[in-house]
Image 1 (tube, rainbow, N blue to C red):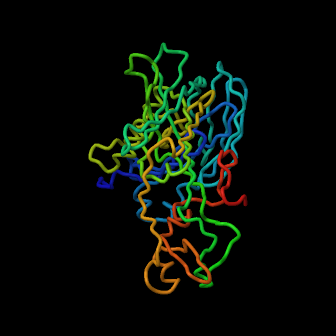
Image 2 (cartoon, rainbow, N blue to C red; image 1 turned 60 degrees about the vertical axis):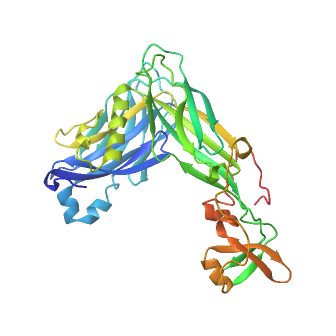
Image 3 (cartoon, rainbow, N blue to C red; image 1 turned 135 degrees about the horizontal axis):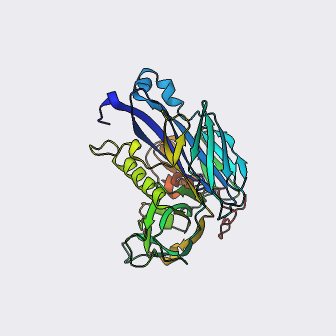
Amino acid sequence: MKRNQSIIGLLPLVLVLLLGACIETFEADFNGENEAGLAIEGTIISDSTVVFQLSKTLPIKQTADNTDDFKDYLQVYAELCVKGSDGSCWQGRAMGNGQYQVAIGTLRPDATYQVEIVYDGATYQSAPQQPLAMSGIESLSFHQPHADAPVTVSLDSHETDLSEPKYYLWFYEEDWEVHALFATDRLYDPVTDKVVKYSYPPVAQGWCYDTCPEFVLGTTETLVENRIKGLSLLNIENTNSRLSCLYCIRVQQRNLSREEYEYYQVRAKLNNDMGGLFTPQPTELPTNITCSEKERKVIGYVGCNMGVACAQLYIPTEKVNYVESTNCDSGEGPEGKMIDKYAAGYQIAEFFEPSDYIWAKSRCVDVRSLGADPKGRPSWWPNPYVYVNP
């Protein structure tokens, strides 16, 4: 980063979104050479187990003099609870690395709630808020304009109150099934330098999991109707293995206040533009958190919701035009011993008695080469194990 280091402090901050499922790391700056502070983020959600992330901010001089301090920025030992104006109180449980888990009970729409944190002799509190009502997701859909185009996943929200602008944050998780082109029951073991025979093809089918790389924001503020229609969540290239068999996306939608929406807008800009000449400083981030000791720096935002809307969409490969991008021709592979072929990225694809092995690239034989877990089938997945049920 090209900044004046005499006025900058370094903040490595981990952001936990919604139910703590999506974690995004970035480095931000605090104005003040000798000032340390605390970053707090999380959401109070009715009838949910939520996670709040706390992290320390360290002055640049301190991190330059002692890199061990920089490594400990997530070592925050505090007392955390969620309190309500109705007398409710839910204590947080330390999970390590600055994360505190809280089992939230039922929130009342006419009450206010806040997070209270006691850390290093000071008390931090978020502003009391009434929980925002939950908006539904009307539909998830996908379309592919033409055979060579990416597949686009789109969302429509459902609103019953159209009188005021709405603000949203979306987060999604992905699961997909992959199959190897060659289903072989023989695998080469480089440790023993032998070929092992199995009773079934052990690495021919598997499942992958991923979360959104960043949150998605949206608002109806500039729309004629206070309703989101056809919001593009992501595009999947038609050569991506996500589309090779069966793909599933699970979307969570959380309503935001205008102030929280503005916080995440600046937060996203800070993440995307870090190091730019006109990058906003974290002190410009809107915040609803205060500290009992006014000289202490604090950034972050705590939201409050009655619930989070969820929706799920499957995309089977027969409904799109998927193009296999890997050359999966089998053959002898590179010259040399079996260990040489294995080291070059090949595995046994076919076997003929008594010991005639046909090799192919690993990604054509072993789904682990695609980042898949052969035993990682989700319990709710509609497709069964094709070759064996471990």
